[in-house]
Length: 348
Ligand SMILES: NC(=O)c1ccc[n+]([C@@H]2O[C@H](COP(=O)([O-])OP(=O)(O)OC[C@H]3O[C@@H](n4cnc5c(N)ncnc54)[C@H](O)[C@@H]3O)[C@@H](O)[C@H]2O)c1
Image (tube, rainbow, N blue to C red; front, side, top):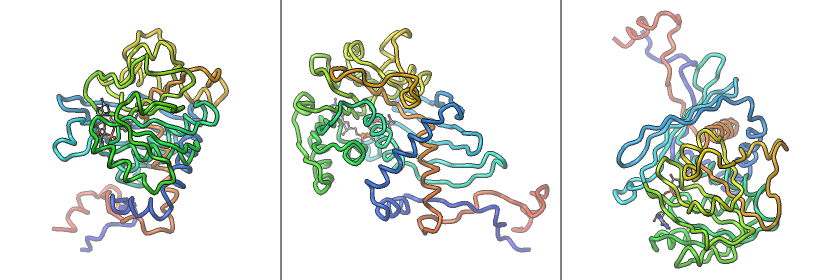
């Protein structure tokens, strides 16, 4: 009996190697720009999506999360971890993979690595929000926390917002040296700093992207002047924040999906009446974005499932006609749909 799977059993699988080839083939800045537009397009049809706070399994050292959503036609989920102590053991803080499926049959469409894709989509989401909320003509950004996400963040702000200078700071000088080296040919003016205070000097966009499984104070209130946009992406778990709460008292705060951000974001430090605006409302015109040039706008980013959905659909749409994937027979698909046991016997 033949043991070959039926054509319906196969879906494209994008390995890490193929994702790397994919990014270089199309060019990282072009991908960041297109991803930003794809994520924004889905934010503009927010109502269509199923939205729940992600499922989080917490342990002493970190968290493992599942992030599902659907727009009624496609379904996606991402598996992602967050383990701040990992880098000391030679593992990454964040690693991920994800799946896109069709809703009408429930059959998967694509399985892909999402560690690189998460860095791309997080940077694209930051840039999407910054292009609407940052002070006009922002040219300088501070990048506090120079780990795995840092270069992606800087390149997205350059490609989407027009940032020209990035000011780097990390408590670990070797991380700053790594980021400076990687951004050397990017066209950005790269300034390595020795304190967070130094890094935010003259910056209109301040990105905090540190990893610590504890309440941290990367920025204090006296450090932050008026007329800046803070892109806070490292505080994304219960008990894990980056900003002193006094900054939140002065800022106008925007979030992805409020029920999830109340649990995971910077705003977990505030009581439930602290006002926030879900960002999609700025895009739909239901809510105001930046009110005036002197305001502090804060994007309290934790990462939301629709951003991964957009990223997965974007990759899937660009795979056709390329060889940046392998076909894997992920589904048992018997010739007679009810004869699963008979199919098993083909390999006896
Ligand atoms: N919001 C989102 O969508 C999203 C997506 C991905 C990752 N994240 C979060 O972003 C953070 C960074 O992720 P990563 O993959 O770059 O982690 P990473 O471990 O590779 O890098 C974190 C860096 O922060 C530095 N750091 C720690 N404490 C600091 C401090 N007090 N001041 C300055 N630097 C400090 C570390 O030395 C390290 O270089 C993590 O907390 C992660 O959970 C958020």
